[in-house]
Image (tube, rainbow, N blue to C red; front, top):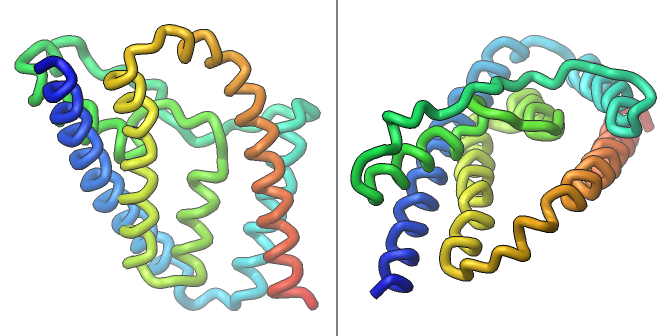
Length: 181
């Protein structure tokens, strides 16, 4: 019975996280789309490449830059009810991606890219994928119950910075090729 309940909670969490991410992604991308509609593509691409380049140095710890984030914590009273409601609250808040801690700029740069060069529906799709991806580790841990996973968190942070800097370099390369060759 516990395994079934863990799976059901994970589905509630993943579903609400995906829905919240989709709504946030659509709004974020729509705002960027509307504000940048008249700008030439080369200006948008160049600006995005410059921001990305600066954050490569940030990821390598050469300079310190502020990543747009909110270090807000979900109040305990919001998640002290029935387990299914708690999972829905967590999913709605964490799936959006803008209410809590996001250590990497790639989240925001992808929404900027989508708003600059695609239509807002792409933000909805990416947001849903992002929200669902936030739920995967928690769901896996909840169903697996393996404490050793928690011991790996410090290593994954370092790896995350390396992956993020590689992603930024790939984005810069893509933007340079697309707009300046």
